[in-house]
Image 1 (cartoon, rainbow, N blue to C red):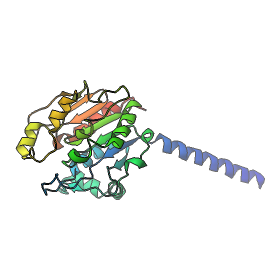
Image 2: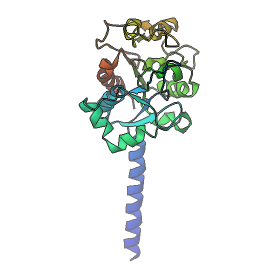
Image 3: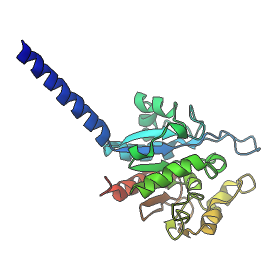
Image 4: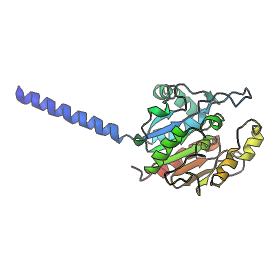
Length: 250
């Protein structure tokens, strides 16, 4: 009887240790989404752009990564471009695990940066108001990057990159090839008088080597573990670029 008991204890210990090891070895990526539901004082609604979450999620989730969500305020973030005719949007939204995760997003204080191999900033015009000055999220991103991780962003998501500073005092984007939603695309959309700043202009001011294509074309840049995409059409390719950049990242 004592022998059986010892064997059960040994088995329990093995399973417990294996469970802890599996938990620690999970490949995790942190998605950042906006908490802002209105474009300044315009009265126009905004939020995170659904396809800019779902399309990179699809690529990274299918590659075996676990995705967590953070927003500046935590809780349920506002969503924009809610189109379930897009099959990837539909798959994401109807995934009960991930629907619960994004609608109960973490606050910055809930996040342990050491758990993540990468951080990804989803777009949506709301990001222009609550990403750039959020020091807590910028610090999380800097820690992930300086630990050898990857940073990704698409469309207006790079607004979260403009003020990230590394331990050497330099801007993260300084001297790196970066792109985002362009000034030309912003002019076409008629948002130039609403936004607090022009994203392309601000990225250039803070040292980015800015690259772009014609409006609404897919354009993704991968440079020194930073992956940026120009517009919603580039979201899937940003996910693919992040997988490329994550090769060799433990």
